[in-house]
Image (cartoon, rainbow, N blue to C red; front, side, top):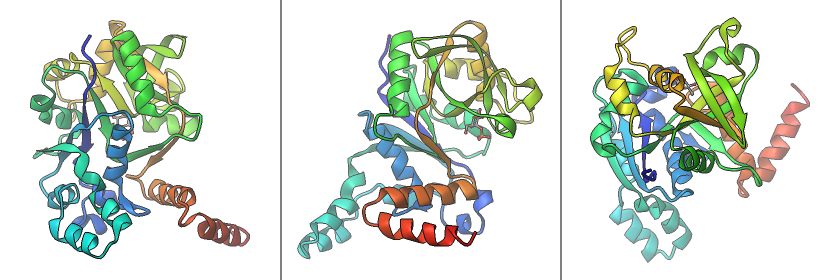
Length: 291
Ligand code: G1P
């Protein structure tokens, strides 16, 4: 079985839910505390030693590329001024080996993956959706670590499963569970965003995947529905053949493509940063009394 050594990050969404800021600033560049969201995603990959990454972007992307490129004048100036800490912050993104791929037609997640075909070849890879941020507390296993371990153990395309309840069930792809053993969930069906009454289980699919080499081939055989090919349709085919597994997600997840989720992520990361923790904690306590 081939090991996973590459990752594809999708960041081509038009960000219409965030207009007017996304008119000029692409969604992956919106900051959570002091970093653009896309940088947190690359740090997640760095933590599992995957630095060979393709980011699928939309045509207006120069600023994303710029963020991950050296800035010689700024770097020189910071060094000359002896500002080593700032120099480190300004250069820490230079270590990634990033390929930028343009998704010219906004035809969804499967379309974005097909754009990355040349980059991945027939190798398995990690797929990360750019508008979700994850955080593992101490003692929790980071999502990508679980995905890689489960993929290596089973050799099967692996999803990350989040337990959801009530109306939230219809916001996600949903998994039918055949059996569950030693942390591996054997998935027998997938439905995309079902009404609550048709849900197969409480397991939702989140935006981190270990994709086996066969998936792109399956995508190419699928017929579009509403002008879009659905990745979940390819997963359903694999599930029907007993070739799809999942691992339960531990940790916190923020949907930063959504305004409330974006604000929650900012609050959470501000509470984790030594620089801002105390001040923000006091502020939240003070306003909470009046809510
Ligand atoms: C996509 C997938 C869905 C998954 C979700 C996770 O949906 O199609 O199966 O549950 O991401 O965020 P989207 O949020 O792009 O509509």
